[in-house]
Image 1 (cartoon, rainbow, N blue to C red):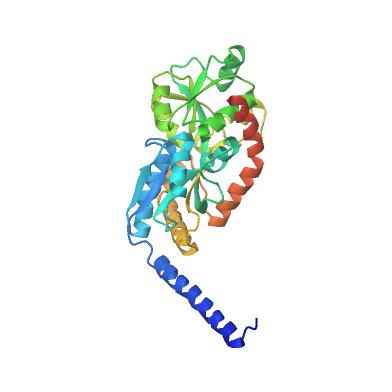
Image 2: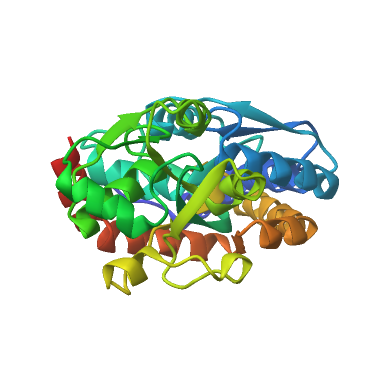
Amino acid sequence: MTISRTSVARRAVLALFAATSLAAPLASFAADFPNRPIRMIVPFPPGGATDLVSRRMALAMEKDLGQTVIVDNRAGAGGIIGAEAAAKSEPDGYTILSTTAGVHVVNPAIYPKLPYDPLKSFEPISQSVIAPLALVVLSKSPFKTAQELIDFAKKNPGKLSYGSAGSGSSLHQNGEMFKDAAGVDILHVPYKGAGPAVTDFRGGRTDMMFSYVGSVMPSVKTGEYRLLAIGSPKRLPLISDTPTVGEILGQPGFDADTWTGLAAPAGTPPAIIARLNKAVHAALEANKEYFQTNGYVIIGGTSDQMKQRIQTELKTVTPLLTKIMGQAR
């Protein structure tokens, strides 16, 4: 069959027309973004650290975007339910996910089948903050130091318990990291979010808790909690007299920090990701004093930097988590 030059030229023109016809509305759509409220899915219940950070970010992002940012708590299964809902949403920028290391790194490491892929299902927008974790007990607890708690746990395997935001959550991950590093057996009690876990801890139904420094400091200041240690590699200026877990265990590499960030469904146009990234940075600046005085470390950064962090942690953290969490089941 012979194909004429005229036929080839006609096909080329038609292909170019089709491409530009699709690109023009997309560019126009992105340029008009946002023109209605945005939904921010938080995959944990109200009251927890991720929820509190998300709500502060949402309020500040509203001012930069000129549209309401509605926080939608979709709790359950260590963040899986909310993440799945976000991944299956339209990739138009009007549904975004407030995610964590637990959702994007821990869950893929410990669950063989997830309804989302940490890299293929999302377009990262930006990291927001690093949240150092702290080990706390109630002020009426007999443990005055972390070493006393560790010594008791070694002599009484399984007698102590700690609550978390759910199996696979960052609080669960770091609790198991602590147990593995200290060589102790402490019962893990999973809840449907940090809020319920805190309620039972305050009621004395669990003995200890690993939670975000920013979340526990108000209760530490009022005397309700006793702060025993932090999970950061280095002491925090805010609480410089509090030792790190690494110091106590003689393991300077111990790191139980976690991060938060925002992501959109895969396929969200780059121009919209860039616009949301700008709003995130404006929100971080607006909340700078609050985050710094409450023990958070501001990160920010680009979409690519967030993607690189996820890729790196999936490679480096997964083997450790698979070992630790496998033993915890």
